[in-house]
Image 1 (tube, one colour):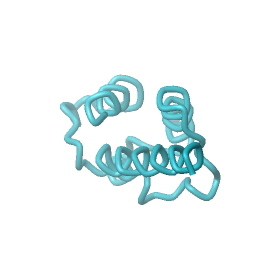
Image 2 (image 1 turned 30 degrees about the vertical axis):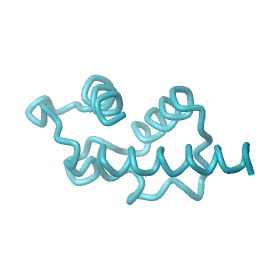
Image 3 (image 1 turned 30 degrees about the horizontal axis):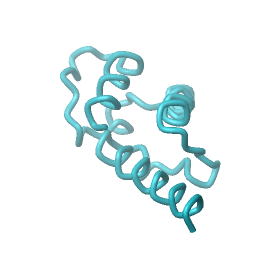
Length: 87
């Protein structure tokens, strides 16, 4: 999952090529990779790829601060989705 998300962020969202290769723990907010528009693009990508819904309440900096944080968030959402399906 980290590789897929890192590849997408590196290919689609990183404007400053000196940041590449992007480490999974690089702050996407401090480096300016994520702004409001790129965050929306990332959310759409995650929703389509992983079949999760990202609510407005989830649009918190800590959920999208790095590739690692995004993966942790997606895994938590997938677990919630499975609990709802099987619960």
